[in-house]
Image (cartoon, rainbow, N blue to C red):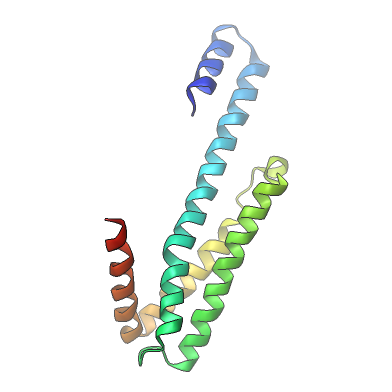
Length: 139
């Protein structure tokens, strides 16, 4: 919550301005929704998309053709989810519903990827190697 919204909400509460309270709550909700979307995009772009891309281009023994195809599908689902989130924000469609309808588009491919890793230990070891390389760049 920005200082301006906090002050405006406080002033509306002190003055008994119900419409001001509702307006400030809507603004705060919008900031929270935008923050959640920004975090999801950041996580997808800076982590999952990078790791999946590395797994696809490595073509290591752990990445058998069937798994490579699954990884490619998951990769594109996550990239499409990022595009949908960004386009929704640009079109301002979120003002109509304040929904998180985009969230399953991120969660489901991540769950598919986790299941693929759990079913294939060599692929999981490769994944852990790539994630440690990416995380070391940040820390």
